[in-house]
Image 1: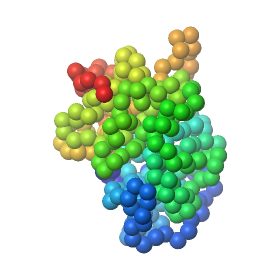
Image 2: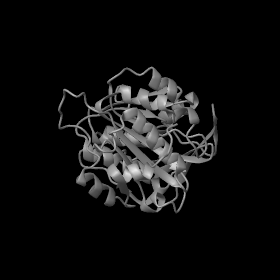
Image 3: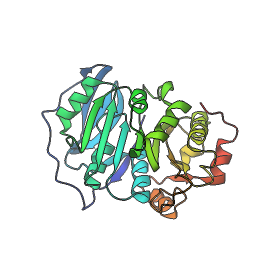
Image 4: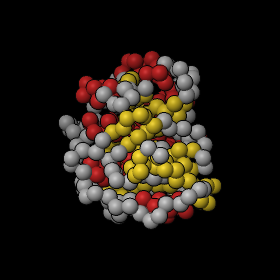
Length: 299
């Protein structure tokens, strides 16, 4: 389950046109293909709400501010993207819900083109109706299984792929495999970034195995080259409680190509940006990451 920080990221002055609200929001649970969805207003902020899917908080939105992010792991993902990339994004979101992260990137990166995938076709239609999300081609929504969407995605296409798919409090097993990681790497452009929301509990065994899986798919030298990292609140990293961790992997460039515009997960700017978040986060890279993964087996 995602946590919401007490303070949240703000919209910058470079945002696109102000958002408009969708249709009247429902009261109480609404039936969707996979169960129920419910919109719960924030009693302290008239424009803010939580979208719950089957009782689990899946998105938190500010209808008056598309750049607003409340969930800590989304703030961490956004910090990675904001610090290591520039310009419009081509992004694939595996797991749509209320499209909070896609809304922010649409506002902050004019000219971006994003595709959000959700397995629940009814939910996809409802969030379009309720939240008046950016229209195609800025943001396309498609009901589909995330694994099938990745398998059929064109190669060398996306700047960023985000995996944020849950059944209850766990990622479906078919989305953590080495095959999926390799397919994501193939659909990223060289230098493209894969961001994973991994919910785990002490002793973080799933996180270690997912990192080992990403290392196998993105190259055994990914950690040493600053192309593989782990981001989380220090208390979660130290195994004190259950929480969300962000895994980041960068597709390597071809050997004959040099490019300065490649995400550098060793970046001191990235470390500072993560420490400056409302809930400060730490980043683990290089030898420290290798020690953290240790002998964990890839999925």
